[in-house]
Image 1: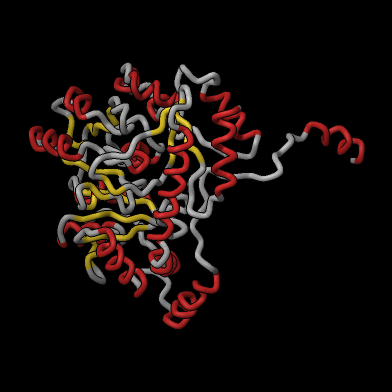
Image 2: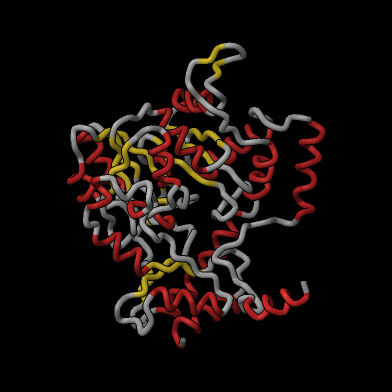
Length: 382
C-alpha cells in the first residue's frame, strides 16, 4: 500500500492555494434561520401548501410586481408544469444557447424542439430567426432571458399573435429584472423562475411560475399536486412538484437580503466592465437601455483579437484558482440526444461563434475585490 501511495502521489493534480468559484450561494447568518425552523417544528406542517409556502407566494408576487405566482420544487419543474398547463404539443421554437434543462423539459413532455439562432447583443433568441422557422406544426416559442438580459419581448409577442403561438419564457436568470419599470416576468403566456442555489435568489432548490390570472394559477396548483382538485377528485395528469416549508421559509429570509445582494452584484459588474474596457479581444456585454439588471452572470466574449483563445484563457484562470465557466458550451443542439434533429443541423452562426467565445467570470454578493482584481489581472496581463 505504501508503495502505491508513493507512485500515486506525484500524479495528483496541483490545486491552487485558494479557489474562487464562478458563483456561491447567498447564505444569511445561520442564527437568523433558526426561528423559521422553530416555527416549522411548532406547526408540524412540512409540505403541501403550508403557511410559509403561502406567505412566500404572496411576498414574491409583491416584490416582483406580478399578479399571481405559483411555487414549485425547482426550475425544471416550473418549465414542465408550464408546458402541461398550456397543453402544448407539436413543435416548439427554442434556443440552442442555454442550460440543457430548457430543452429537456420540452423533450420530456413529448414536444419537438426546433433550434434557431440567437442575437449577438443579448445571446437571446433572434426574432427574425424565430419567424423564419415557423411551420404549420409550430405551436409555441420557448425563449430564455439569457444571463438575465431581457429578450425582445415586444417583437416576440407580435410574432406570437400573428401566428397564434403560445410563449413560455424561461426566466431562470431574470429574477428582479425590469423593462421600462415593469417586471420582465409579465410577458408571454407564462414565465418560469429557478431558485437553485446558484441563482440570484435561492431557496436551496426551488422555482416558480408567473401566472397571468387566478384561473391559470389554480390549474398550475392542481398540476403540481398530482392533479388533485379538492380532497378526492383528480382532474389532470399532474405530478409532485410542490415546494416544501423549509425551502419556502428560507425564501422568506432571503427576501430580506435580496436588494443588498443585487446591489453588490452590480458593483462587481461595474468593476469588471471598467477594468476590461478596451482590452484587445475582450468584449463585455453592455447595459441595456430601460432595463433594471440583476447581474446574475458576468459573461465576456474572447474574440479573435485576443492573444489567447477562450479555452487557453479559461485554463489559465482555473490554474490560478479563478473558476470561470464556459456557459453555454457546447450548444444544446450539439448534445447527443438532440444533434440529429433537423434544426440542429442548421448553421446558427451566431450561436456557434458565441459558444466558442463565451466565458463567465465569477460574480456573487460576497466575492472579494481581491478576487475580482485577480481575475482582471490574468485577463489583462496574462
